[in-house]
Length: 82
Image (tube, rainbow, N blue to C red; front, side, top):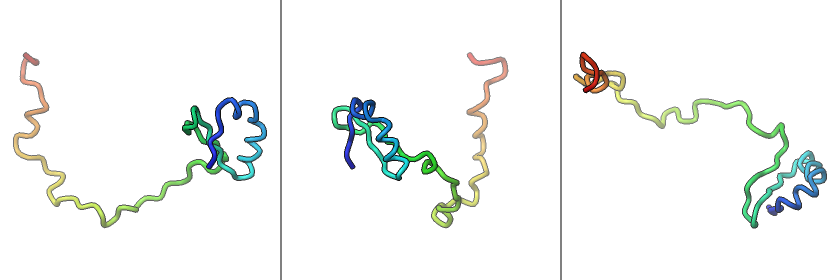
């Protein structure tokens, strides 16, 4: 995909938008390196679908159980911090 410099993009924005509406993606860059991509608005995002990691993640049976004396490390002593 060709990278268009910012000056050319500013000069030809209307023409570039016509290409984007037709379904083409446009890369805009500085010094030949891409910094932005023009894509059709409706193409961005989409509804997420969960469950892709089902069966791939393991949770230990005791995951929700805290070790003994664990909470003492997260509470301030009586009388405030010293």
